[in-house]
Length: 102
Image (cartoon, rainbow, N blue to C red; front, side, top):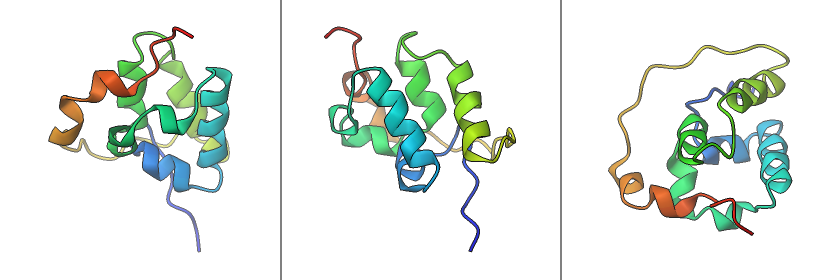
């Protein structure tokens, strides 16, 4: 069975569950000195692109394209259609991301 292709709009949960994407995201977090557990449960339903936006510059947007290519055998997979924002992520989004302060 072929794994679903990951994009910047795939949720963090999708990335973590993916056999290639999971280790890529865990490595990215480790390089930031962070763990998934520090992001909070709301982060799992946010897209990877949205998490990067909320990082306040700690993670550059180009990282999303790099991760998408790495997870899809070097191909930059085009985005799936825009999904409505999950209202559960609005109020807690700012508190789920690393602040960059150790």
